[in-house]
Image (cartoon, rainbow, N blue to C red):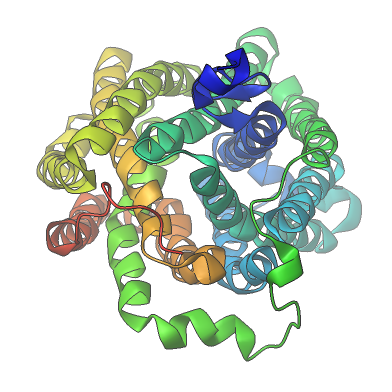
Length: 434
């Protein structure tokens, strides 16, 4: 027997966990860029919001405007989830992922060099809005196409582990932007940070996308495009929903609470502590940094657990705990950085555990022909309507003195998803549908 034939899939030259290195690099850079981009906007909005609105607007109004534009970027995601994911199924994962990395880079560059309200008047928020729309379209097709490719590249019995690794790349993107924001905020004056410091971070994000284009050009596709129906029509993009209505509804149910918790725990809580309890933003960024390192450990453990014991035990445990702790956790936030770090670390670890189980479950619900588009649209729709509006709703409720309602809103959504976790069929021990 030859040496090569006795090697395991994990040990083959040029592969990691049985996945070609160029494949893994292409997946990694996309996740890094995606999480870098949306985290940058969420963290930096408080620095640049006043630049895109009239000078006489109060800070809360400007922040609401920036979060409103952020929400619009998410609301356009469903259209992208339909179109880009259909392209991924019919023309291959690689062409779709090249499109999304170009879009994310272009949007970051536009935001980084966008003129201010003082310079161009009402065109300033319009340019910011258009950039967020481009970013939303790109990100809307990124997740489902990347998840489909990653899960199809993973061997049987380790899709949870690969999903955890896939998620870790996103955390690295968050860690990178948090480190940059923290370094800038500690070393630059408030005036410098508010005038040009935040721009450098967005431009750096655009540079990451250029690297992503290079890496993704060398990816191996997991779709045999020679045997796929390449004719594109608007009726075809609704075919997965027509043929798999139950799974479509299931994706929405699995996602409503999950996406709300991702954006609440992952980016909004430090902003909440700053805006309503006076905690310095630099300390809020530190809490997010620590929480992301905790997330990496949690998601890797959860990924292994979901492969060995199933998706359901992991999802149900995390869902129940998030439902129970979110209200008291938000109530604990004040001007204490230690308290924020503890709250962020615990909550984000549970959200990370959900990601390790939910990501493979999405792809295990649909056959390969509809894998990206099947969950791409309902997922993007739910993220756009629910996840992307979390900061806006939280800020709006607080602005009218109803901030105590916000955690109950999150808990209600999480309880809905937990019921879907309980009712889901276990798919961890079966091969991906053909």
